[in-house]
Length: 420
Image (cartoon, rainbow, N blue to C red; front, side):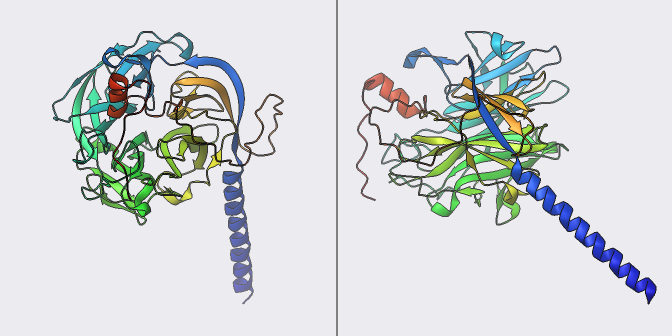
């Protein structure tokens, strides 16, 4: 009896200790944050489309990798990927070099390189946002993005297209949408491999016709399938990784507040993920669009300890600055070997390839460092007046924008009237 009593007491104490540890771990996971200060401006060299009057533009996430000789390779895209190199962010080559894509898979439409992974043997894997033309017969202005894969063996100067790996269901378009750009699709994404190199995780924007499948969604692919990726990606839905990447449905981890296909959507999009080795956590930055032209309300940040648990992402917090309508937030770390996918305590924050800010990550709200120069906390959300001149440059080189440049540079072309 005495043995049983002591054993029960030990079990009870262990349970209390374990519960306390779990609580502390959860509290710590929710206590980190990022502060911001203004910093010396950096701008990544952009892509060039002379036929559209574009000489230096960026229109998506800009992936970064290093080779074994200590050379940084940066890709920026404007309907096509361009490459610059240097030894730091401050001496990247310009103008950029237009890369070559061997279209062996027969994928038509623009290809924006959004994410990369470099194997130790030098093989570079890339994933692109593809915009197929004329998906809606009633409105050729609209498109529905999808995600493709490609591979390079010369540091990204030449790519071999491996084909489309993620696509929305064929019946998920809304061709009567009020959205200026998309009738549906999956795109505006980033990719990261987990620390154990078991899976690549895709964080993407879902623009399904039905509101319950709109928002930030996730898919993953086994690391071993990277050379033959078509048909090997699986979307997360209802707590399982069982929906096919091609045509499967999703459960968003950050669903929309208002329908993407209305005049006043309220939706996160364009997630950019990195592993932060100072926090030992994964971090995502996201845009938030509030009208049919994707006007940006702010930039948000969220954290998670484990990629395999999509439900564990923290509630998004708005960073304390005005994004001025610009999109595509991402970080690039400042230590040797840091990239857009790997950063430490300090990183530069970029929007559309322009950085005016330094991010500092903190493990606790009661941080040991004071910051007299930090930007103040974000003020409450205020709906800004809609501006018809569209000074923001949200989707710089989509086919619609090229048409605008060619035909009506000072005014958006007329669109079909939406009755529903």
